Image (cartoon, rainbow, N blue to C red; front, top):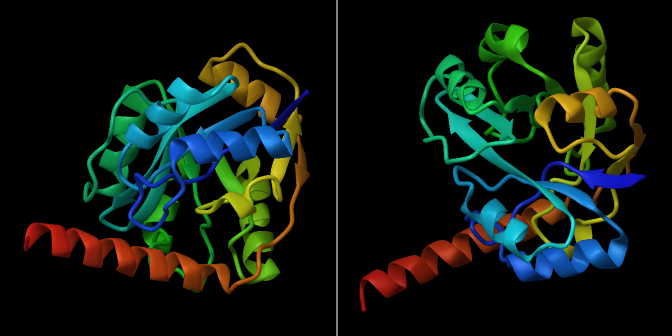
Length: 223
């Protein structure tokens, strides 16, 4: 049986300071044995985690399209940010990947995909995050669940972790699969969701991290 989480970030994201090594160590401590690393606009963190982990790691990326974020899973290389939603999805599919919609109705995140773009890409979508630990309101998760049900899409529950303490709170229990995207879809369809929300104040820590890293980058460039 797999204890799996398909949305998390390393320090390759601008709003996380969790190194690949710390992420792997924490996963081992809390029993996560199948994960997707989905850094913002890069697969480099996921590749680093896969190199360090003794368990299965899906290469992912949370891509900022021109109309909000779209997650690609089972990728081989980075998809550039700023493309249209349809082009972003096409790039995921070209790599044989799966399209997942992260936190589609979280009313407090500016990065959420627009309603127009969501409707446009739904026919090409594989997975919806029906429980994201960082969503502040249960109603937003419930709306995502309804979306998945109405359109016959796979459902996932994710931590969206940017810090070690978030890992292990939310996950899906699923049977082992053959390592392919198609095998993953078949198994995820039978998965059991375990979801626990984080305190909304976690977003304050993320914002602080983003500002801190931006200041450090600026300081290095000027010295």
